[in-house]
Image 1 (cartoon, rainbow, N blue to C red):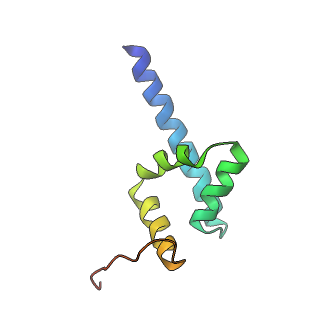
Image 2: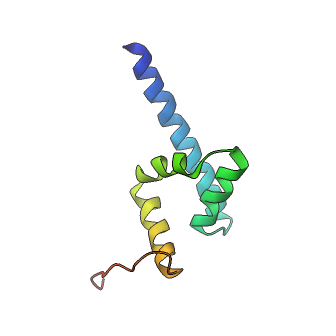
Amino acid sequence: MGEKKELKALQKLNSERIMNEIAGYISDGVPYIDAVVEYAEKNGLEIEVLGEIIRKSPLLKANIYKEAEELNMVEKLVRLPV
């Protein structure tokens, strides 16, 4: 039972590390989608693996979706004016 808890803690640390590295690319001016793809290629990861991590970050997920909308990669959502 303790082994499962350690595994979850390790996965969380890895997720946080991955998110921090992707944030580093973004802060250097790399677009969100490109940052994720670049990270995956650099570290030999499948995009699907990063997709699971991105789903856990509402802010990153929203920013990627917004960028995809601007690039006409997904259907635009109707939003209320702020």
